[in-house]
Image (spheres, rainbow, N blue to C red):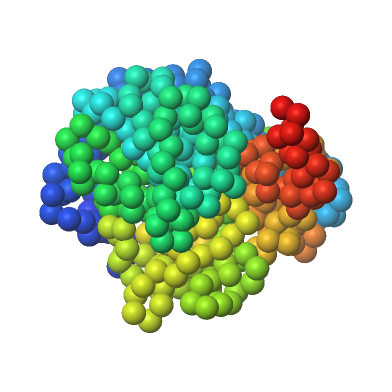
Length: 416
């Protein structure tokens, strides 16, 4: 079996990772979803409808842009940027939201719930709920609710109810837990539109399938531009959806190297039993959390640790089981980027290419800035710009122009 086929297998296990560890009353819910997904991926009418939404609603294919100025500045490998930020709603998240939204309609669901960290998944969920006429509830950790306020505003304008979760660390992990509680209480009429390749089977397989459109387009686009495959693929990794989206199509192309970049935050250390990072492969261990087995940041008793990242979308204690498997077998390399280098990457890309990338994506761009000068000019790197940076205004403005931005906000509040 090819590696690509294996990552879509019907057992939902990838080596020792994955699985379905859930309360008994949710098993019929997951079985219903699994059946609908595997039927739909072979249904010509379903695929035609999905393809139409990708092309005419979301705006696919997204551009594969040659970063001429950045390549020249760094003086090494050619750098191509897959600009998923130009999708409708501003990130790759719309890819699996459209797929799951159609599945929810097919299953006769009336209500969609979701978790979100950076807000991009919540925004995409609220968008497709409005499009398909479904009620929408989005759970968001209270910390993220405030630091990603622009996306909260847009979700609410779309008609979604956004609920800040005030328990635990008040971040993405806690939003997931609250969404699972909701599903337990409303199993019949509700679809939980989980936002990454984590969770119980079939979510990792399903979202890998829907996100694989990214790598499929890259392979076609790069063959047209360069008449060959890339040498390196680089993507940031929170739960892992944008990374697997880029990597999947190339998994059986053994000469293509793949690098996933985690959130190094303030450094790889722990303070007061809290991590100052979200780099699972640096200090994490195997565990079963939120319905699946993978690598998590946890203490010696298996209790999940609080994490930190400047980017809300990477501030998660676990990672998708397929990513853990690919790391174990040596198919992908992993690294991490510190906040300070992420902010440098944000500015370098903006000032050299006129592109504001999401802080999540800037983790990957930071790694590209490091490795490109060390490679020969005939090498090709493709980096996934998983989202655009306008959602991070309240974070980046506070970092780059704090005094003026705070004056603006103060004057706005005072004068209206």
